[in-house]
Amino acid sequence: MTNRVLYFPSIRVPRGEWFARVLLYWDSVATIVPAEYLDDPQFLRPYTASLIECQLLETMTPDQNIWNSGAKNNYYPAFLEFVDRHPTLVTGAPLSERVTSRIHTDKTGTGLAEALVQRGLAQVVAGPEWARWFDVEEQTANLLMAYLAAILCRASALPTAPITDRRECLAAFEQVRGHGAPNDGTAGLVARTEALRTTLLREILPGPAGIIRPPEIAEFKNRHADLLRRFRTSIELEIVAVATIEDPELRAEKIERVLEGLAGQKAEITARMEEHRWKRIGFGTLAAVMAGGVAAADALTSGGALTLTASSIGLAGAVYEAFSGSRSPDELLRQPLAYAALAEREFV
Image (cartoon, rainbow, N blue to C red; front, side, top):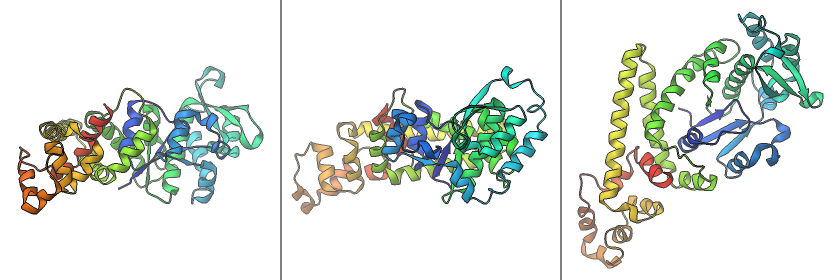
């Protein structure tokens, strides 16, 4: 299972609920940045630059990674063959009458970009020959970015999956499958599982309406790294189980049952937090409770009235018994859905 994702199609990542969930859910998130802009915070804009600075966002340079991958020799021909066989791209209206997306030559390669210009699917906008920007016909651009993301993920030394907040880019994966992109079923799997993941996380993991400061996200993830991995494993197992169901009605029914189950687990943990007055302490203290320390339990239940000598007369067990409910604090905090409950209390 991958712990790392590559965002596309834009260089600058989106701000808002969806990407907040992405940052909270994955160990590592990357974005595709042309080499000449890697150290240019003005181009990257403050939010993306801050995420990179806090090590929440990695950068992947397309030109170098493609060159080092096994796809370098067939990268252009495979995509151009696909474009030439497409029923609507080359035979469409003139470029001046079509919607376009701006793409840097690092993402296309000079040869591929010029080939698209010759086909009436792109035009030069600005920049020197080695670092030009092109306006590319929108559908072609979506297909190209899906194709590029698939190639980069396949070439990465670490298991990486592509993600996007653009429905049209996600749909493009179905079209590029088998045309130079991974032909092992990855493209189709991405198109199906990403929609399922978005649905589950929208209901289970908080997506704050406001902007969370990158240092806060980094600190939270570092504090709960082990819990995050258990949470993600639990969610991904559910996603795979649902994705294998071919019948749409059965798949929809399974999603409903999964959501009910996950919401129930999260609600139980949240309720226990309220019962045990966990809201009175900082989340950093909760990690100490997991360790079963008497001092942490002491501060939690009595505001520090007990002393550390309590351990010598066997009060540690009594302290845990004082927690009503069927589960002890450390057991609850080991549950995968505790990550979502903690995130909700911290960021919403």
